Length: 150
Image (cartoon, rainbow, N blue to C red):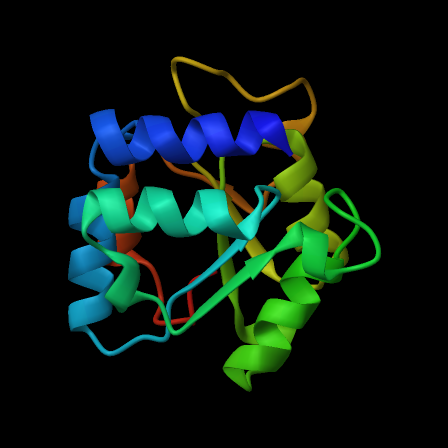
């Protein structure tokens, strides 16, 4: 519990780390009216602090932390709960991930999974093969079919 409190303080004082194009992509997708959600392995308070720091917390209809489910990623639980709270069929959701466990969780939930590799922390071996598609940047999300994004 202590470590997540340090992250919250860091985000409050220095801001959350930014992934190139992430805030812009979220803002563009939210403007389309698509229901956006977060399904994260982080603690809820850390997620909230990061979203508040980035000024985008109001753009997500649902935020689910893996501590709300029995099994974290790579189990599909966090994604299935997110789809349920959005009121959508999991097979109609698009997951945007940068990790092997996230890709595996999204696939296990029956969702379409777009892997967007993070250059500073590349995904583990097998992530590319397990993903439904690989995007070179978050800007490529604009050209995808309109699915709820998780």
